[in-house]
Length: 352
Ligand SMILES: *Cc1c(COP(=O)(O)O)cnc(C)c1O
Image (cartoon, rainbow, N blue to C red):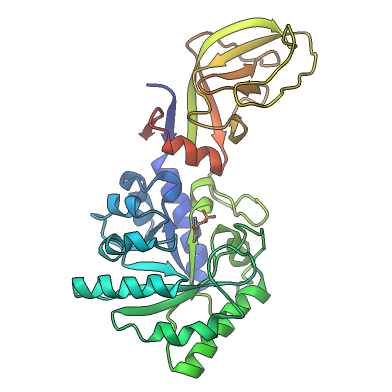
């Protein structure tokens, strides 16, 4: 059934293994991030097969899907107050930045008679989640008093909102903060989580500050690239996930629409370049599945002209390969493309 997202399991295990090995060498444990594939357990198994022992996801729904896999589960998005009961039930570890939430987690944990582990997030300047680094020590004493909460670690998130690149200064500051916690409170911080796939370039260069013990890695494993500069990672595949969609029309048409131009299906006023008559194909996939800007035809001579909710329009004029109605066109994906295709219920996912 098409559209189909094919998933090469062995290639995924390869990428996870390459990245895990690279991190092992620097004394860093990898939390394998499963959110881009919606926490699908059959895919997550590939990360465990590579030896990863913590799975991390931003949504509790996905951790619930993963509950039967034997590994630690980490909740990446700071919890909603309304979800603390599910959080302590399905996550062993959660990332946190609000005292009221930690307090609610403490109460929820007590009911279950267990201990919930937390990583305190510190905002080092990217301005997404975390205690702002200048305020952190004012708030810490209040967090130390919760009996059913173990402060397992501290962490930071970079290159998400502000585009701040991890470096020796900001990650060094995280390590310094852990030392200060130890000196002032005698608390041993076991896990220092130095970010996501954008921190990997520092591992590749063997430049990551000593003391960082964990990274939370998603994109680098699934797409084979680090995300500070978008460079390919040596020995990793960038085609684990491929989109395959079916051609439903092929016709020669002009490149300029005929008539007065108003708005397109998404309320934008389109503009066109006159290239004369072109050989065009309509492919049965649309914005309900993926934004066409997030997919790249594998055939370099096929160009995406545009699309609407259910139709993708291609220019086949320059293609040497012949296409017919019923043929399948293949695409590579960027992160956003993979995320929305995995999320679309209209896309058939096939692990191969
Ligand atoms: C998504 C996420 C990650 C993983 O990011 P990648 O760029 O996919 O490696 C790590 N940490 C947090 C808090 C996240 O939300």
